[in-house]
Length: 77
Image (cartoon, rainbow, N blue to C red):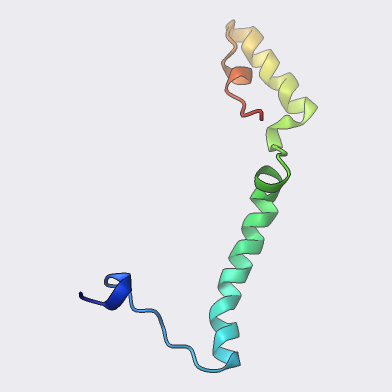
């Protein structure tokens, strides 16, 4: 099998604490970045469009066009 158990990907060989921190820092920052932007949705079931002013705007759009698309397509749990 070419490349071992990961297909063509060969994991880097990391030796020592400094290199481990160097390789893990970007991953940690990426996870924290995604938590900042998506954490409320994934962990607390809070959506950015659940604010009352956004819902009022969507209701106005539905009333203007005579549809229910804007509110029916919201992902409520």
